[in-house]
Image (cartoon, rainbow, N blue to C red; front, side, top):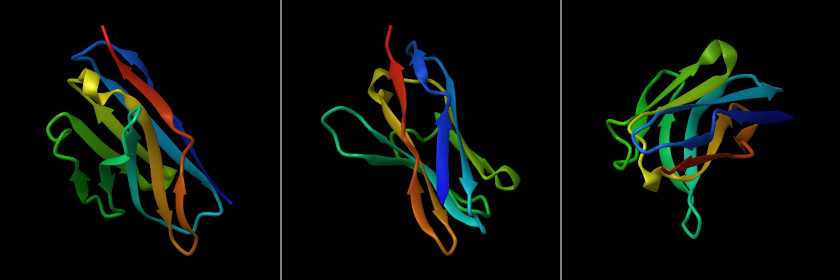
Length: 116
């Protein structure tokens, strides 16, 4: 099976930065798209950003210019650098990965809280 393990969440003041990491392990042939979603209390889960194996990126309008997604294919790891954080970025952030010949997997989620 495949597991995704996230790290890097926490409490940060408005205007601060955090870097999330997510590593996939297990029976992995290759990984197509990897990405980050988030879900705030009382709201639907939404796409934050994703990145193809070749490095093409896609961002939600609300995070463009502030967040940067990247990946290390050799390490099966995806990163999300979050700068200029706002209170409205507060949410549980979930990593996702589309594994070739296996399907789409989700991490357990990591809490990001932006508050003074």
